[in-house]
Length: 236
Image (tube, rainbow, N blue to C red; front, side, top):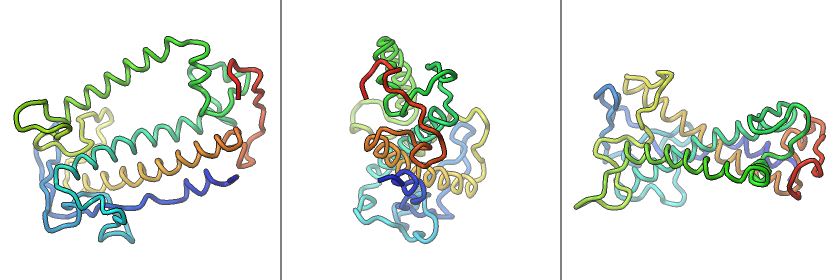
């Protein structure tokens, strides 16, 4: 189990969606690239595939669903991939040897495996979780208002807005979203592949730390284990 995190980070996310060169077209500034389904293509031509899976990799037949269901799947995959990418960065940055954390005195002591950091926060500042709940809830409410159709006649639970492309919530402070349809498809594919890899990588790091309670770089022999469990207000 020692190298489980490393192996997970090296495993590429299996591709389930194939891009189509004729399904994108320029639209409004907010929804810079609108998408139209290609019923002749695998998974309606949604982007997300790289070699050697250009024709679609779907061993569980998750793509063999109605169009609206597949869009909901893609919305969930995109958002979970984004969270996983942030989680992987958080795991690595808050542990040895970088060990930067905005909520801890990491400059003068090892704060231990990242999987227990929120336990430490709960033990010392319980109110933090209520604040965190409100912040996350606010972001999720904004995403729901952007992407999901409001309840009403003819609207099923989690139906997406008409013309909404999964993941395109209109948040682009750095102006990275392309206006060109082909470039948008390419960027969407890159994001999905990195998100899939991050989900596998984070799962590997999580399991590794649950197995032996050691930080990732310590497990890899790249950092010294300075963690003293008695220095934190929880039991490991």
